[in-house]
Image (cartoon, rainbow, N blue to C red; front, side, top):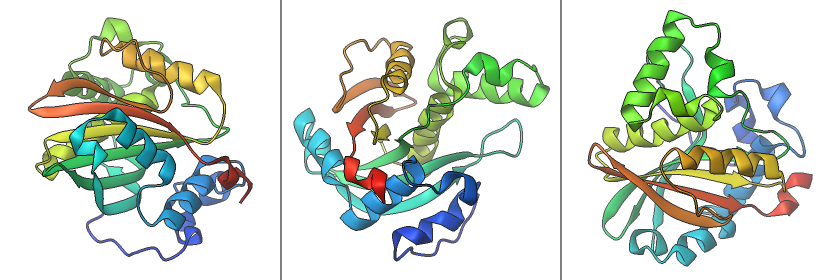
Amino acid sequence: MDMFFIPVTSPEDWKPLLAQPEKHWKTNHSAKALAYCWQNAQGFPDSITNVFRSSGIPMFVDIKMLVAFPEYKVPLPGGTTESQSDIFVLAKGDGKLVSIAVEGKALEGFGQTIYEWGKDKSSGKETRLNYLLNLLSLNYIDIGNCKYQLLHRTASAIIEAATFNAKVALMLVHSFSDDQQAYSDYKQFLNLFGLTNTPENSLIFGKQIRGIDLYFAWANGEKKYLSV
């Protein structure tokens, strides 16, 4: 995990931080849209703030961003590949620290299912999957068709909440497209936590994990950033 961070001063400063800059830094793709949207907002974009305020949950209604790290890596056991959040945010609301792992979406989906990701049955992947399931208190039998990206991104929010002694964690999807398949994948994943009423542009409590309150949110971003 990187221990030193340099401030970004423009959206283009986000590009070198990507795992594959030339592949992912494109118009109509989430990495570029997310960078321009959040950098221009200099805080939470309006599309995010509106979801927070409409939730009616005090800690999110008045939440303030403290720091945000683009392409933030969280080490996981079972290999050298980290969980790389598009943005990690440490925020504060109602006197509580909040750990937020942001996953941006545009034309891309959420990638492989957990079954597809783990079908080679390597020892490293088995170690990682067992760790993630134990952390989130999920059952292996239920998860195969859910997306692996959503699993480890949610774990990242919990892990960093523990790191910063925050009592609240949020896995936030910021979507800039009308891809209903991605939204269906998100809903399917939330079903693992017993959540069935999960409309777009909403924030919902999931469960308490090791003393940390876990929330989920889906926010539709400003479409103008798909053309930058």
